Image (tube, rainbow, N blue to C red):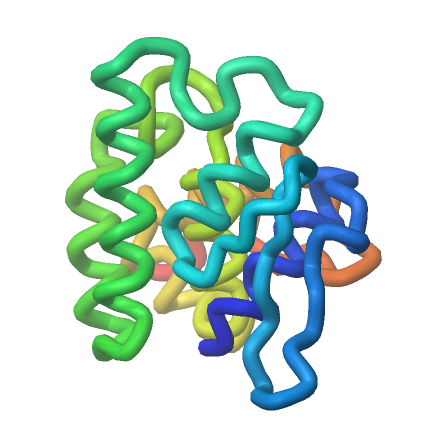
Length: 165
């Protein structure tokens, strides 16, 4: 997974102007330039910045605890980006068992980034596998409706009723 592309797509979905993403002619990387000219080269600070400048209030957490949790989940995305997909889905399915979103009770930058990270994996799952990871499927349906990113990421199909027992 290309983390730079992921950040660019998150910025597009949140209507963060593309002028902040600057291609480096000497490499394949993309750097994020803040409004005050600061250059962010790391994934987590860039994701936090995108969430901060988006028009969504509290998108990087409303309390210090939520902000710490946002940071922790962004680190998780970074560390688990190369792991086995079923291992990640199994972990997330357990975590989301009694939660609607990853942080607090509202949609945050973590949900958007995690959705974009998992999109390719999840869109290839069979209906049976989507039922195995029921909690992740529920979360994914919620986030894809909230993110409104159909132009870049077509909606993933889910069964309305259980097909397998």
